[in-house]
Length: 270
Image 1 (cartoon, rainbow, N blue to C red):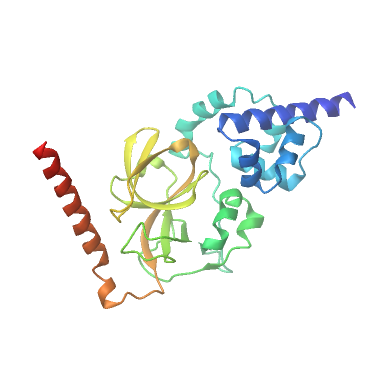
Image 2: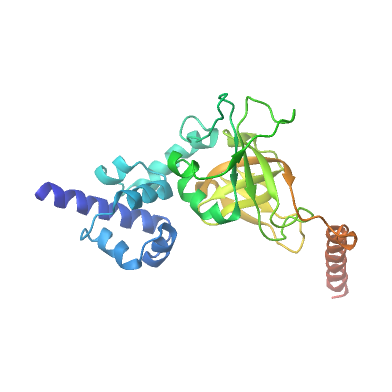
């Protein structure tokens, strides 16, 4: 009984420390892993033990193994995480990519529709979850056999002229040093889920996320919250633009430029 209590208490302390190190309240963590806030309190106080599916979700979310979560004191988890981050950026075996193949052992393109985006954030490395997603093949020369590909459906108008609900065909990026400034990528992030942006490196551990629609301001993120990086190769859209929509992106950019020029003129007068 004493051993069981120790495990519960250690697990609870690990959950509490990991939650705090990620700047989350109990409500926020509960929302991210799909349980109610009272259960988070019970886990942290050692009054209840998470069931296996919840335990797996916690491990995926905090980027630790279930064994470490249950058996190791992770009070110094941030130091350990930072020491692993360089290797993780280079992709030296720390990220396991789950893929599916056809009867001829050819890798298929897994499709992540909008409705599955939240689930993908938690289950991207879970073979059981990946089996639930649709997959397809594209017999085109641009997609070689030596790479892994995935298709992500995007929402919003931040990347016009690529329209909302388009499917971005992507190539897996294992070594994040290969990210090229000014190119578009799909990132799987712990805060925002699936994000499609144009990337620029600010430094070794920080990325600048830029939208093609100038109405959206650029912002920065830390690589600590990034789970996967996928290089955009092309897209499939079933929303054909109308004639007056084809120049919407250029018109928006022109208006934005004019506004900036007017602001500069106003500053010059003062």
